[in-house]
Amino acid sequence: MGIIVWIVFGFVVGLIARAIVPGRQSMGFVMTTLLGIAGSLVGGLVASAVAGANTGGFTPAGFIGSLIGAIVLLVLGSLVMSPRRRAV
Image 1: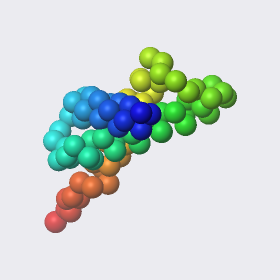
Image 2 (image 1 turned 135 degrees about the vertical axis):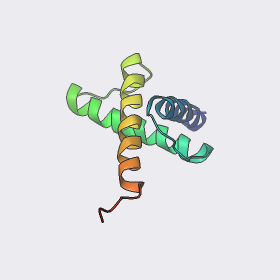
Image 3 (image 1 turned 90 degrees about the vertical axis):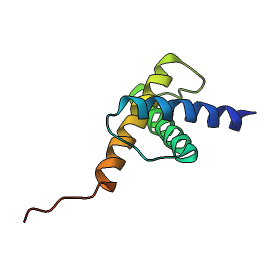
Image 4 (image 1 turned 180 degrees about the vertical axis):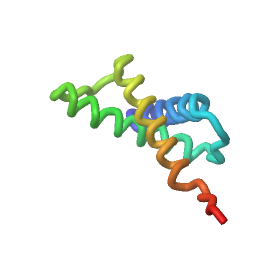
């Protein structure tokens, strides 16, 4: 049951992150879910490093950290994947 909760939570966080970041992100269901899960992992790692303790379980701060992590990954991904315009 835990993996299903991770997938649903990742999808919700990914959708919210995509709604917050301006511009068009051409992602499907799977990439949105993976974005949210990766954002949760990044947010959890940062929270563990800052707090110095295990931050397991659902907390509002964990949700916000997951959302911030997903937004950062989305922005970094769009910077890396965007076609660069060359000056002529």
